[in-house]
Image 1 (cartoon, rainbow, N blue to C red):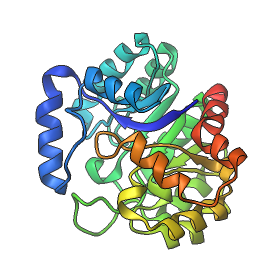
Image 2: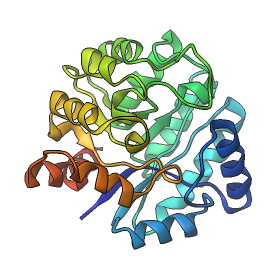
Image 3: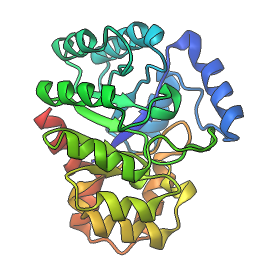
Image 4: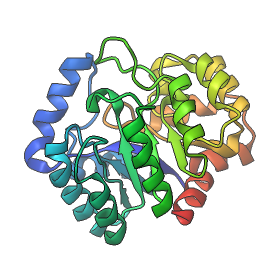
Length: 264
């Protein structure tokens, strides 16, 4: 079994334009057009049984429509949609309640796009609300090639946020810090947070990534691609080059994800 805990899809009418714009901003070549149909096709062809579809409320204004789309994906087999709230939205708390009631299991934060530091005091209130509702919180970790410094979700800042809400279910993407893997190990490895391996095949050397996984323990690592920016096949091949046991690979490929989702 294979569960991709980090993929992105967009409404059909917006997908191609959104992916093209993001690709131009970050200088990446996408592997899909961002639609559900093409994403599902790629996932099926490359052995993924279930994928988590992450949505981002880049502003308070887009929050409701982003979450309407996430809720609409609940009817799609093999898709686990996450919603999103913006920390400075006046409706953030009611949106969290609406998402939970609808059956959404997690919330995606991308602090670069949302233009809010991860350890912002207002955001801490949102994290506590997520924790109280049992919602998984998945964060973009570290740098983003489409944004200039300062980085809003450094591992050090992420640790401060986690410490303020230790009961929360935190997942920090990109080995805990894209282009900041050493800091991820330093600040996050002894925290309760999970990490995912999304886009790491493009940004982290095999040895560096393996050392990071060892520091966290394979039981806190999730398979993810960041599709459309990477693929299951490339990410699987990347992990298979590491000196991981069969049991560790099974944990990363699907068992950890199942356990986390079952608790949400």
